[in-house]
Length: 65
Image 1: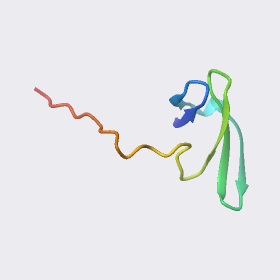
Image 2 (image 1 turned 120 degrees about the vertical axis):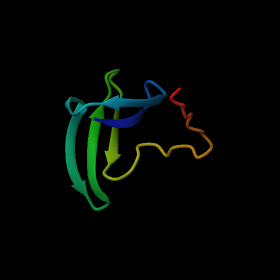
Image 3 (image 1 turned 90 degrees about the vertical axis):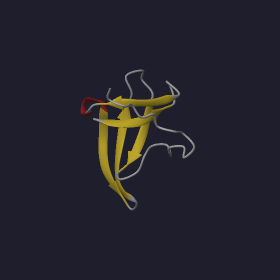
């Protein structure tokens, strides 16, 4: 499983390997072409996020009571 930014959903989504359409090598590294459940398509370069994550977003923490 991997996560990508989907322009169709306008959000990050989790995809499984069945959503991979192609994989190929480029001068910048491996590239994965994917198709979201909604039909939107995109590419993900190995070792990078499909959209930079915002630094100002705070991740909530939960205390086990």
